[in-house]
Image (cartoon, rainbow, N blue to C red; front, side, top):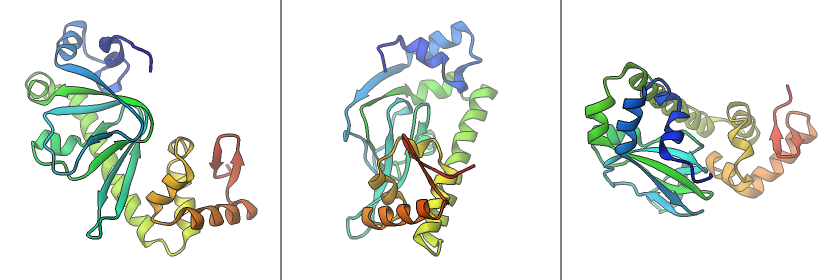
Length: 209
């Protein structure tokens, strides 16, 4: 991401696209850009965020740890995704942790000022609801991954549901989401390609149309 003025960045975000110039300037005053490096932690489970977090560059993984300390990846997010918005808006501890998988950047918007100025805006409220519904879809997808009977079913389901995201992730990262080892993932990818259920492209794999 180049060093663009924050106002220019905000105008490109769908949920802010209908704000007039005065509103954009007010939003800019309560917003700040923070840059992160690959593998840098964005937040930890149990933190309470005082800012609405908007990913504007890079890929972020959201994860938890099980009772044995194993890291369980919940999902990966790309540009213009809101992160941990439900807990932030409720002012409650964050239910998971987040880490940058690539170099990237976040716009942090002061949550108290945001609520005063913008939460009643229908366009913004609708965008937040849509973001929350996407998180519900992600949860349902993870449940399906966990109950799918075979590794190949899990892999096919992932590539069908996440064609764009799959191009940004390394194979071991996708394997982590699906709860399998990198070796199992690689073996089953080869099987699916041989069966014609996946095709290899210059940038990754995809389900044939």
